[in-house]
Image (cartoon, rainbow, N blue to C red; front, side, top):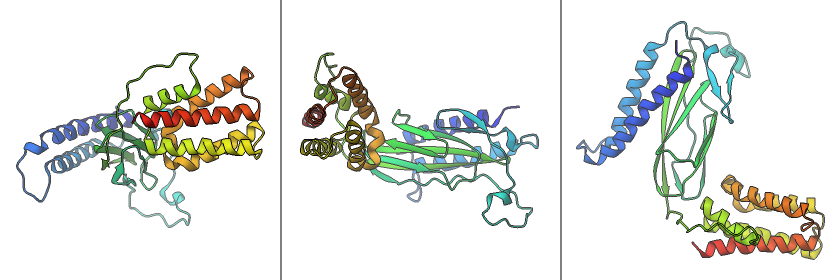
Length: 302
């Protein structure tokens, strides 16, 4: 007998095919003004698939078979608790059976480069399956949570399926991303002896970071450099801690989008420190200003 994970994968696969087909043929369909073609196709197939799968559930399928997909793709069987144990104030047991319910909490409109968060914490399910249409590497899911950052404007569809107690539910969320796309910049890998500012331009270009966020981050590094010069920050640990806090304040929820760049910076700093080239306050100040220069050089290319 198939387990829940395989069954959800098949269900989502069917929905993705039909949703994609609906989005392609939608403009050519003639329907009434009360319902747009893509929505009509999506809703009909979602209901049909849900009903079909629900009918195939047998008494042999138990909650102990459900698998939870964790943040690292690990699979952990979840223990089953009686419904009344899930309440802060236990209530007398009833004959009502708890059914799966997917509740997606996320914004419907965003800007290019903005980090969008998806929250399923109010959902009733022990197993989740996420699918995005169209597919992109800019979407990451972590069980009940997911994040997405669009590089181009457009309409993106997110499909979530969940199972609980022999029941299944499917929800669809549409996100409209507005604003100009982040332009492609011709990439030239810097020479191994290139300055850090040149590598910053390359790393930002690879990850297509927004200009407004790059500017705020440049200001952040410059302000830390000023504090180092004034003697307010002298110890390397204090400088790093102050920089991390300033960067979080500068880019806010978009910090995760900058992590590939910041991780590269961290690796370079560790290498310089190991070579004895990043030990004094003056060396930190010079490097911080060089990073800010690289961020502004990147902005000039956009």
